[in-house]
Amino acid sequence: MIRRRNGVHIAAIVLSVLLIVTGTWSQSSQSSSARFLVLSDEGGFASSDQKAVAAAMAKEAERIHAQFVVTAGDNYHGDGIASATDPRWKTEIEDVYSFTSLQVPWYPSLGNHDYRGNPWSEIEYSNINPHWKFPARYYAQHERIDDSTSLLIVHIDTSPFVEKYQQQADVYKVKGQDTKRQLVWLDSVLTVSHDRWTIVVGHHPVYSAAPKHGDTKELIDQVLPILKNHHVPLYVCGHDHVLQQLKRGEQNFVLCGGGAEHRDVMQRDDVVFGIGSLGFLSVTVTARDINVNFIDSKNMLLHSFQVSASKSK
Image (cartoon, rainbow, N blue to C red; front, top):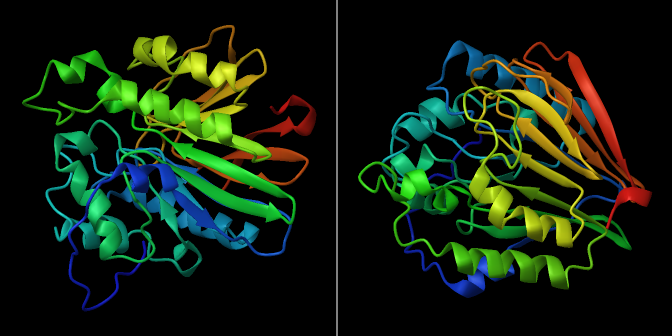
């Protein structure tokens, strides 16, 4: 993606609570909408599939005049990335997503494979590449839609919640992460929010009808009650390499894990749409609704749905 700024040295990063709570604020254009792409599990080692998705994203970004890109984690697969200056940033990210229409802010999240490497290096990379906006492991992103309407995107860090990773400290570097503190932060951000719309992004699914991973019990037990309490209409994730929309009541759970490869899906009562396919999301948010389109690597529209104002919090 995204070309790095020449001659910039990595500054020391202090991960304070103030940084985490403050988050980021973006002023959108006067178009009365926020338009962006979402992908996950794009860490494809610069494979042909990853490049095909990137090319399709570029076309869609140009079509909708995308203002930013959101990732739901596993920005690198395998054993993650070693440092903020690793040459793989160029070959697997910058060169792959080099299209002009993708030279916009990118707001990443961390996945489990990112935790197999040095997850802090992905935050430090923000000091090297001006398009990479990654202030902390979890953070709030605000986007202006019009003079009286705004969108809140809350990026959470789901890997520390998963007990299996806590038990494999030699593989996943999640030891010492305070999940209770993150839950308090999430609840407080949603409590004080006056934004018209809220989308929560994490790597692991709350619900997923896929044979590889499926539902995440830890998130159902700990995160879902907060999402329900605040009537969050949309949770977006990856981890399972599928494209899927599930619906429980008025809440939508969306997987967009087809950033570099795809796997099988299953059918069950809560599945509205599901397919094993490469692809990403194209999202447009207005004062009246959230429009979500599932796009594959050939720029084909696979599925779309809308969250209307009457169903928001």
